Image (cartoon, rainbow, N blue to C red; front, side, top):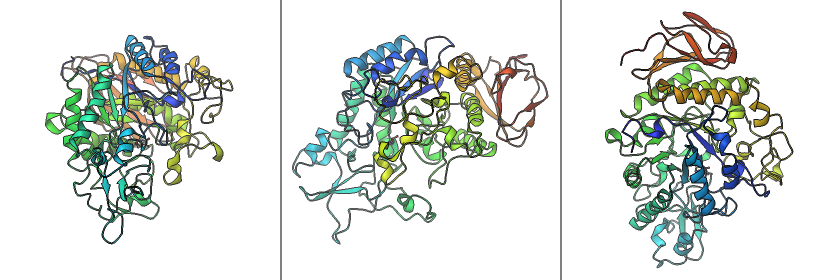
Length: 550
Ligand code: NOJ
């Protein structure tokens, strides 16, 4: 087992695979685990000709009616037939491990599918032993719903069950009933799910909506949100204080952590929402006995109420990182993502002036430069944008009340062929434009893919980037700059110009060599003192002349 402070996940770059959309091996238009195995060399073949990622996170792979594309699990201990079977999963784990890639699964503890045998039993009668495994309540004496909670996807969080005359709670779709984590049998069953996969060699988990599994014991109403604006989501008319990040959730987090600690070198990263202080609580305070990592999504969007996506603006980025750095307990580190399967892709969020691709280049330098564990969503490395999807091809049921997430889930574009190298059949979602593909970018040293490879491999060899401290530096307006330094290693300065004009940057003494740049030609150049950082460009500069003391 690695010494505390040197665990693999601290210096890993993690790649998120959306299994339906990565690689289809059997022509049914849906990605699968065999397809992923066939593409592992792209992710890491041990050379700089591959991306060089250290781990993959697979969005849910379990049997599911796929109402929420796998986040409605009907069996936690198997593999969805459209993705493969347990034997394929075992092979995937072995093939990944042979390449030094760790595998994280998506653990969905808050809710199951309504087709899960536990729920089928639970809804069968009041007297069923699993009745209390879910959250059932009658209507209030005045005939109203058990409480005022809303579903994340919109509408009330309660659905009525005719047969037993009660409502069940679902924080998401009505086909996703919430488990009752106050019932010790549920806790035991869900801990055993973790053990099932850990025994099979899984290296850890991304945990779905970690902050919602424990609610207010009396399911008390949420208070109104005084800051709600009519243009905001209707569900945010109330403050989600009794069903999200409720204090009792932290004991449940510790319980999950204790299961992981039964094994060597495993990790858990939580999907959590809130302020930097709220996220920090999931790490478990000074004892660090909570999650190893908690996602900080603020580079995508800041805390709710949701007021739009984070702008590519130096002052905003600096503030977000400063908040994360100051809120986290000692010995922990942030975990950043610039995109995922729930939000528009990076380029699409930053393309109002048509310069989303330039910002995407700069974002690689930032993400790989920041202190923390970076997560890269599949396809971001080639600059996939949100695809236009005709009405009759839309799939995500959340679109009826929330925002549809199909545009950011389209299949990976391996080449320009009609099936994009993804499938020989009809893809489950339409493709984006053929110009964007791995094949096109593979041999172009100036491509976004090439920059990802250089950045990730640089980070792999640069201990200051992997584990160094973070010190913000004041340079020029519109430039977000900081240094990273690990004792005994050369320090690295990271600078990002978010202005659409050039900016002059004054380097601190000793920083003398460009080691990574959005403009590839700048790499390797000696620099000193005042340097011009072109519009929307970013770079890393090493202080090679001196190894600073600790
Ligand atoms: C968060 C997941 O990322 C999202 O895709 C899903 O719909 C909800 N949790 C519900 O599981």
